[in-house]
Length: 198
Ligand SMILES: [Ca+2]
Image (cartoon, rainbow, N blue to C red):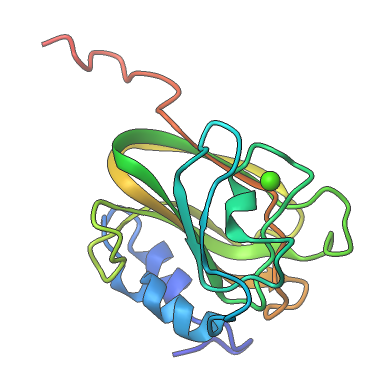
């Protein structure tokens, strides 16, 4: 099912299901099939080489070349980035164990040649198994981001091991690959009043 612009309707499904934890239509395997095939020259599984996530594993639907592998979206360096081959696409991190998270911040571009390729429709989902086959929880996302390349999402504290960003369409051209410099997966920024008192 597609919209009149040819954009997968999965995000709309999610929007309509706000409040429900699981959105099977947003599973990563679907994004993987549409997002492209593996390139044998460039590994789709990478280990983060520096920063606070050093040593953790990242997977992605594709990457454009060996200079912009998926680990570079988590290396703490805004001058390095992940660039997939096309959109829709996805990238996910394995936190190494279940963590309680409540905030995600992403940066899209630092003025490279891809500065006009903004994630327009995207979701962050979390999973304890890494399957992303329907068990995942929708954490945050936007339908219709036309200008922001630095976005912070705060959501209900959720325990997950794997966090995935699924990008369904870019702006201004839905199929153009977006450029992702950094994704930060963070603990809840505050404790809801009263929680833990009993
Ligand atoms: Ca980076």
